[in-house]
Length: 517
Image 1 (cartoon, rainbow, N blue to C red):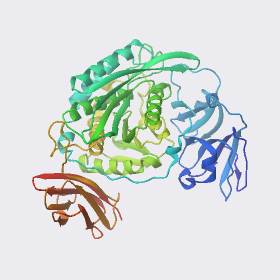
Image 2: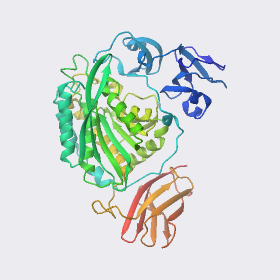
Image 3: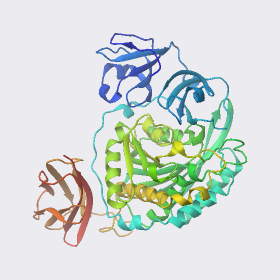
Image 4: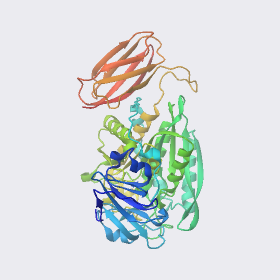
């Protein structure tokens, strides 16, 4: 890090000072420091904060700016190359630069153009208290998603990408962007799901604008209050004149196409939980559409249990043919499960799951800010993509890398399906009476004991655990009149992903469980 620390001492700042703390924030959960400051940005082993904080015990704290600090005066710059201060200086005065992130004070009002060497520019924002809570694992849901994954169609994905590319530009304040929103809205509606174009107003460096999110929904039949989201940004930007040319095939017609493909397939199923399909606007100007949406969701008390955000999934040379999936503390469980789901249903896809709370350059970060579990799925080689934010970001330039984009879409849609929990038995139309199901299976991951809670047993029940090859690894019977709780000893089983199947009479349910050592 290229800045001075005041280390291993006691430092007290005024309530409005800008602080930098060299510490993994996960180790400070519940500490006095976290209670006294506003957290502004979290990286892997450091974070920014505003306020009064005392930190000792061998840790390090630096005073970057004396208060009162106005967050509107600062920008975080995500760089394509580590420690590239020169590119950051094009945005403003560099206060510090560490790896691929710089904190700057803008020298002038930025335009809609992107900056050479810069991946993304975003404002500083205050994290909600719920976003700073320690990780608590949740039960893993696992429906039979094989046919859902098989239904993902590469030609359908390409057709959507080409249609969006053909708008020439989808700069979020241009008529072409609104036209693309109308097209997406019409496609959602054609699948028989509720959909809406939602306008929002914002100010970009003193100038007022209006842009739009497109939000579609498939209500859950048993737990509609639980919400699973698959999303991507619909807008595009490019160097030169983005008001005329910003085709954005990879960035981010690819993510939007995955959202639409998910709606096409999942609209044909009933789910335990509600599924929302969202295309965000003004992502390229600082995650504005998703920030507004996530803040409103938090204010409304929405129970969002998983967010899968897709942003650039087409560029995949052999040496970097991976889907990068960064996660933060609140998203640990979701990341572990997404990795397992991908391995089971899309084994040909190489997924790089990585704790990286500083990766905040896409719409998942707006949900992190509010404490919701969210993941980003993005091509590993994003910083090497020669078409990034260029007028050459065209579908034709990614044809050689398929089926990588299709595999990424499959893994993402499978994850959403698992969390939404398709209802394949015990449900007729909208009737949501008692139905046999696995209510929970945990802990996640399990080590020695797996506890399973069944609901609505119609008689004796049988449980079976299968390994990845389909071999039965464990079994247990429950008698009628039991409390529906089964305890399986898994201490002798190898670590890995297992399918759990429960049957009672003519009804059955399935989940996936993870065993770790």
